[in-house]
Image (cartoon, rainbow, N blue to C red; front, side, top):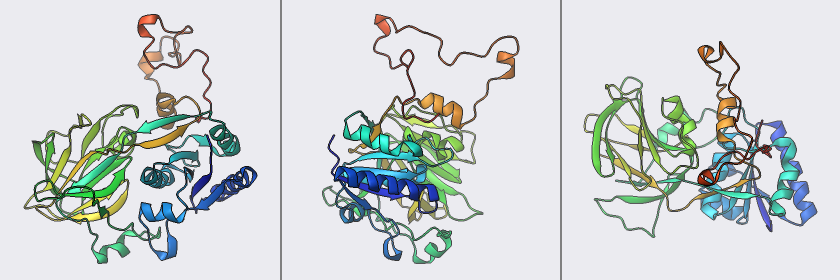
Length: 358
């Protein structure tokens, strides 16, 4: 494919990320492509995704150099501009980035030559009973030395708004949307609705709605299921709920999940992909649903999600399972699947991992 403009999202605290950025810039010089750094901390403030991609010249490929957090920033920009996103892996336990840092140039060559697969990932978006705002006195408490907060989500002017269906927000999440308590000594009380029906009223530290991509992030840490990133679903997971039913619920992609802050609840913070974006009060609500747009992620080799899961989570075999014999082979067949199984997505015989991490 033709690569005319590349946007760089670089983890500023990693020396190897800065070195990799030089490699990308040198490649762009060789190919006659434009390259722009996207500075998310511009001028002491944070810009919206639309402003960031416009300032970078509307790139058609976003390259992220860092871990999953850096990739999430790049994904937000790519989704805004319907651009491709390529993640270079400089993280520690990530599932989102793909290309090893020493393969940056060859990865860009592969993209230019069309030796790639575009993987479509599900995104989440929101409606809310009110505009999301962060109280001014909270920002100093939440910076943690990492820079200012993102601006509040803008309202989508192309969507209808009313008291019943709320305000459509121009915001997307690749991993999750989280409603969490603000006070250490007080849980949030939230009515949870799935597909338009009340599931239950929860008292919990937090409640989150994740995509399949985000199932291995906060949702997993809270006891949620691991879901293939190729699946289409919304995963609702309560965090430390004060009730007997503490299980996740996996909903269909066309079943929205509503979270209404109840009368006697404390305030609740709304975080989108780990970024605080607003505070809700009793009576406020948000509706989380599958976004009409998709993330287009570049894949240069087979996506070995389950192999990566085994490695990154340090999964080990149960002692009782291997005590009296040999461990299970990584893949137990050596021939292609028979005709009645040809529609299944399975590792090819002798398939090399390509650019996937080892």
